[in-house]
Image 1 (cartoon, rainbow, N blue to C red):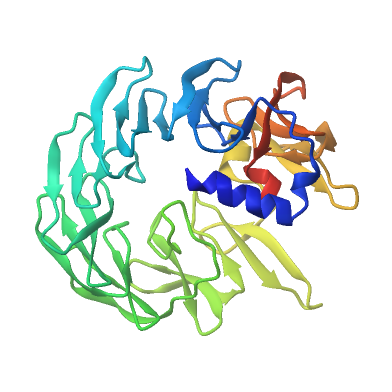
Image 2 (cartoon, rainbow, N blue to C red; image 1 turned 90 degrees about the vertical axis):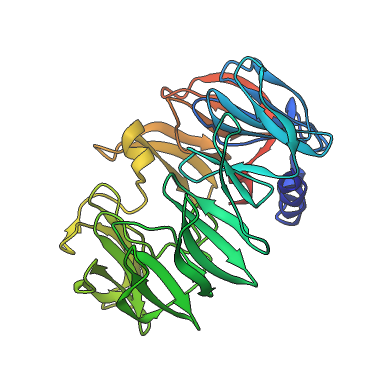
Length: 360
């Protein structure tokens, strides 16, 4: 994985390289289903460990991605395939490229096929097409630098004529052309005109796109220089007054706005636009775990607050910190990354030199 090499370059530029690098591995990723991807000191080989440090997969693979606790995409000799948790071969390493769909239900092989976990081909792109993303029903395709949508059985929904599209949400498909955003229905008919601004501020989602799709019945869109929310009929539900917004999740969304004093503030709103008491920095993952990381900036020390009371549960004493996942978090203690539990107790020490938050 080239991301480790680029991360090290960035880390050195930022001064992270001052650490003595006393960890067992060079890098550790945030966990997926309680499993952590780790790489060798030189970043050339990857493996997987659990929270005890046991190597579920030894550090010997050119690439490895944890899809879930029973499915792993691995790379050997320049080819990729799928293995199970016991190291058994599910799909031999035969593809040039292989990655899971965002919803982790299917896989995109060689950028021109969609396959299931057993290797059954569900969709094959037409000549000149690339498959970029998919779910159980729809495929996002690229042709001649333009984007379109097809069904999993190959029927065209939207021709590849747009500068950007997103997979359907709430029965609507986001389409963008010449910097303007609109929405079609599932038959490809434009039902919300292309009057909104496609503003790319680097806030891509997990698919690498700026998310203007519908979620929970609302879409965040930009009109002029401000963000607001519309419903699936194009009606403005929450006015265009925010400088930044996120999509709704569990009935809440984080937003940012400049107040009367010119101060930029962030907070969460409900679907009526009502401001909520819950801090904007609390993610759904934080709320699930009951803890959220906080930073004392002048000391660059991290700790954790209780998401219900706002009180400090784990004092600020770490040089870096991730969110909690399944009861555990990655933290930096001096020269190395460690794993702690919800009491702050170190359960695995000096596991790696770097993690994702070192470049945050």
